[in-house]
Image (cartoon, helix red, strand yellow):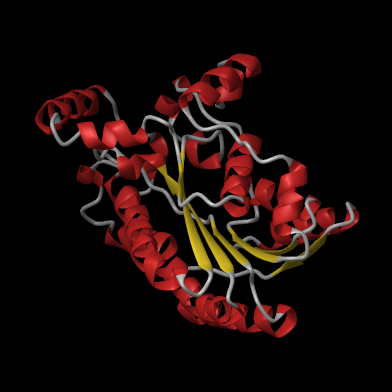
Length: 299
């Protein structure tokens, strides 16, 4: 079930754009920023990554498409080329460091460098701790995809960017890592926060070499990741197109962070209302339940 079937499209768009960020970069400005540049996008086979790749290619970027789903990547590659853009697909599983090395070797052999890295791929699980006791491997995979894989990829591409004296790393994160932690989402939020903190920590180290970073604290988006959580269907979400537009804002602009306008005050205010929030979240947790998909995973 999708938000698009529970809200009129115009209402969902107006409400979500008021609650979350809205894209601000015109296609002309995006073209000035990325035309002729090589942009590597992880998680490009579907959702935000796919829409971002299409928009960047339409603006003149040479997009390097990575994801696990090779058939979807090849389809997107052909779609972009048919529209007159430049694209190259390199299937890879970010949880496998040796495969990342192989992929980067191929990319650099063909393209020489990557000007912009869009770290978009992510792995999400919403599950009560009661159902996690025998699921350590789920935490391991989330950490591999959301933190260690992106670190490995960045470490491989960063020396080339620094040697060139220019580069951009755009990290597609979640607004939730700037809010009090939500029950059932601990593993996902922790793994996304880990890479966010690491990237912001190295930002000052690489700035003098012309490499910039941008953290995108994305609002909720109507994608496959949210489709399996019925409780989220009642909440306003960004469209995939708007989410891709915000990622392009990060690629084209100079801001170090993008996210909903209310993130900063909520982040600051949560320090003073931690105990009441814990009580609220505990109450909400007791009134909600795990999805069938989360329960089936333990069988």
